[in-house]
Length: 190
Ligand code: XMP
Ligand code: MG
Image (cartoon, rainbow, N blue to C red):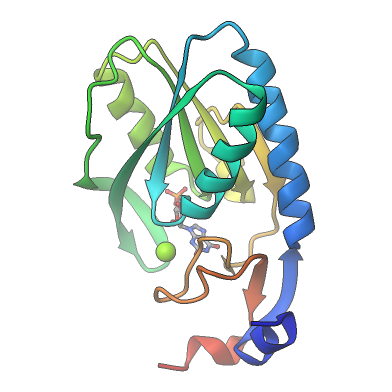
């Protein structure tokens, strides 16, 4: 699908281009590779479904510069009140293996209120990881207000609802290679 077609499919404007995402991913992966240069391996934990595109791209770049990586996925659902998460999280898919003693890096698409991530970090610590840090491609202003340590952040975004590159509105737009904002009319279509 061309970008023009995406626009007619409801995208109002582009926030992050494919090129910006690619450059930032490279930059973040090099930082991580340098910080973990002495690590034997690194366990990436991606949060489904939103982080799937970033996880795939980030892991491939990291593989060129850093220690060997293993990929794990978790799926969680935060009980949403309106459009904001409540901080109460349910595990839909847990880790497939033990993470005790491992260096863990949580790969997040976007940190908004930070409530989901804050819960996840506590959970991973109860599983006795040697270290737990976070890479988030995007962060929204509200996240600044909660005490959730995100060591590696790609972009600080304005407070708009965004879609694309893994992020959805009602399960749509995840496959867009860029991140954009929807036209108001797109929220009403079935
Ligand atoms: P909290 O508020 O707990 O929530 O940090 C983070 C999760 O909320 C989702 N989220 C979004 N999804 N466009 C989306 O498609 C957005 O602008 C957006 N902001 C938050 C996302 O699942 C994220 O992991
Ligand atoms: Mg969603």
